[in-house]
Structure formats: C-alpha cells, structure tokens
Image (cartoon, rainbow, N blue to C red; front, side, top):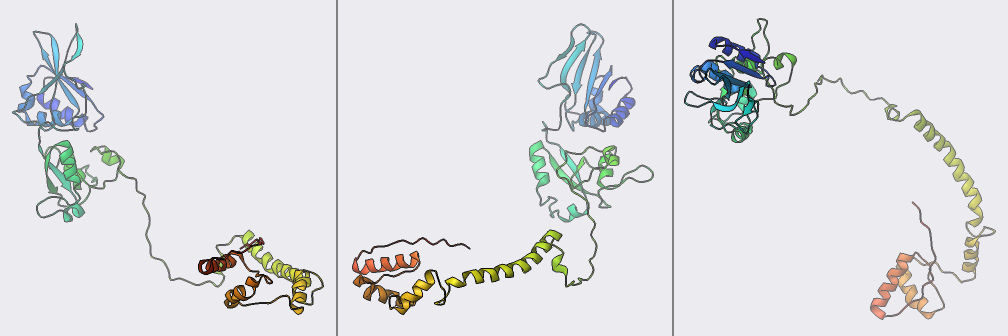
Length: 336
C-alpha cells in the first residue's frame, strides 16, 4: 500500500490500522521532515514496529529518500536510509538490506520489552520475576532484548467481547495505545478472530480436542473372551477341537505296529528282540559314565543317545584319560 500525505495524525492512524498483519507493507510518501517521525511518539512506535517505509520528498532534488525505523527506536536514534527514488534514476538502494525485511531477527539496540503472561505462567514465575522454563531467556538472548513480565489481571489468554474489545493477553497486546505488553508467551490456539487483531508465530505443535467423561462400573461377560476373535478364528478353533482328536486316534492306530514287543514290524520290535536275547541294556543317565568306562571301553558295547550328551562324556573322558573315541553319527530331526 502506498499513501501520500502530510498529515501526522492521518499517517499514524493509517499505519496502526493497516499493518496489523506482518505480511502487509506500507510506503508512506510525505514532505514532512524526518525528525517529526522520531519526535512524535505515536508515529515512532507505529513505523518502528510495523512493516513500513517512510519516503521523504526533497523539493530541490525532486526525489524521495526512503527510510525505515529500527524496532523500539527513541528520540535520540536516527532513521536508517534504505534507498532513494526519482523519475530519472528510479529506485536506487543504498543499503545491503532489501526495502522490506524482517526487523525482528535481531535488534541493534537492546530495548526492554513487556511480556504478558496468564495465570498458570504467573504461578511458575520465580520471585525475581524470571520464568523457570527459560523460554523468555532464550528469546531475549537470540533477539537481543531485556524483558519484564506483565501479569494480566484476569489471568486468561483472551476472548472477544460483545463490544469488540479483547480480554486477557490478546487484549494486552492488541491495545497498543496503552502499551500494556509488547508480546505474550503461552500455548495460544489460533482462531480467525484472534488472527485479525494479533500476529502469531509459526505453529509449534498441533493438538486435538478430546472429551473426558466418567466410565461406568465394569461388568463381566462370561463370553467376553470370544469378542476379540473374528468368525473365521472361532470356526478354526472349533474345527481344531474336532479334527485334532481324530487325527491323534488315527496316528495311534497306525503307529501301534512300532510300539512294544507286541509290534509285528519296525525298529522297536528289533530292539525288543535284542533285549530278550541279552544284546540291549537300558541304562539311566546316572550310569552312563560307568557304562562308558566298564562296557564301551572293552569295545564289545556301544552307547546310543543324543549327540550333545555323548559329546559331553567324550570331552569329560578325554580330559582325564586322553582317550579317543570313534563316533558314528546318527542324525535326528527335532521339531518344536
């Protein structure tokens, strides 16, 4: 927006109402002397804290000199020259910075700012006026400013009233004429009405609203264990309860020929016959070392058992006697 005026009150009111949003840009062209923008407190506060450029017209040279005010400037400061413009030369920048830039990256001078806080933040503030979460300290160090807290009487974040006014921290920041607070810190939620009157930082987090209510007394359902199971799972379980016993009976019937001495064929029948003929001896584990020492060592007996147990006995025997053994591995496939 470009405005041409020599009225001080008009420029102050226009800038204050037009530059609520930081994305707005204003170029004020005037013949007023530059010192008036420093001497007039309302003009100085408006043009120093907003995204605005002042163009002072010089009659003799017939060109505009473009200035901007540093944030929170005072009467002793000087306006910074950014560029000049004329019909012959056009716009010529005299600063490394662009004509419109972010003034609040870091302050050249160290102003003292007022920070509005709500009730919970106030309770967390220490007696010396500093906050325990160090957020304000982090901002003050990065942007170069000093601060003090302004506790809002109603202790709220702020809401719009019927007459158009605002309460809480939003109201303290919005009422710039009183300079109640320069900015506010807190977990603010964005709303269309709030965005119309104050500027927000980029969102730090996104939260969702939930409804909290009391639960009734628990009731035990005897068939509740079936609720997590789908129809297919229930059908599979029922089928397993019927089919598995039938399979077990069938397997027992088919394998009966291999069990005990009554079996007609199979390796178990051969073992039973070998036992009746005195060729097989069943020994408990506690007698294995005696069997190895007294029977196997004579080379007329062999010991059959799982590989790991045989290897343990071989290692034990080799450790004390140094004897070597001949192994005939029999592979067994174990499943679980």
